[in-house]
Image (cartoon, rainbow, N blue to C red; front, side, top):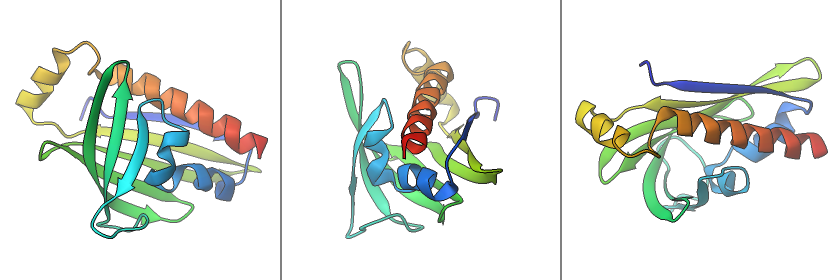
Length: 151
């Protein structure tokens, strides 16, 4: 899809250290400018395929929650989750890590999965555009790089 976004950074830290920051949605609040907390649902205690969580988000004065379902989980390599809002699939978010020399290439991606109607309605709101997601992803990966490189 044309609105899929991928942001990449090279981090001067081993994959294990980067994974500690990105490999569990419950820790996303420490690195994301938008999602500030995640609560596991249905007895889940961590990221495994099919585990569900509630994500608590904020942007300015706006507050909302989403339901996430872990879709992919390969420790120290990849994690992704599908996001539903009011029962509708809206996105897949994730991270991929690749060892690169003495460091790690970390990639964050967002795939727009909204229906055509939801996509049109979403774009009518100035804050709901792929460019805003890209900015947030860049901030997230800059935070990951800074924290991972500090050790």
